[in-house]
Image 1 (cartoon, rainbow, N blue to C red):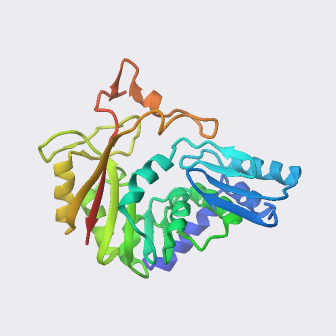
Image 2: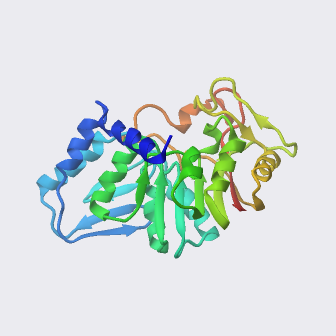
Length: 299
């Protein structure tokens, strides 16, 4: 199917009955004069003069767009305390990449938090890929005030080989374990890169020296669509089968309740409820608790 046809189909999702009212709220957002923003741990947006009425409208819109997973953000005094303190991951990875003048893609970009943070490195172009109509709407809400040139595509990693151009750097953070064919996913990422392009990847892992993977039957940490949780040797084998080279393990980090936790800006449960209440080293299913490995690899 031609890529533009897929785009049009995906954009139609913004008209779904649960998303359409949110899109109507976006259309009524105020545009405060002399808006400024900062791209620190909290992506913060403010203006010298904003009426109380406008602040109320912005807060109402932000609350309507729940659940907020990645962030945090602060808009004109409304602090969006997202489930993930995403600056922990971004700050961990930032010493390992330089995006100045590069064409950069973020696969599974959610609401664009990482993309907004990347603006400070002055890339040539930023493109986010995520098929979620809610996350696209959250991105549009934030970008209404920042007015960046970030391109948000409601596409997935499988569309990279069809995309109009290749990328110098691709980020694929927290996506691979959701894919039923991880090697094919890595091949799509490889095809999306320019020669000498680099991939920044993070995924769940389990400890071990043998190249094997955990394959949960139903859920992992209460997440239903986790297919494979590899050891690092298995992950390196997958990357090599996809033709990546110069594979480097950057960091290994256990997920903790400081990084992921329940707040008023989400619905339902978070990490604390996903772990064995008697042994936080295990998930509720009895598997090793979530741990992530961060990888850099070259085409």
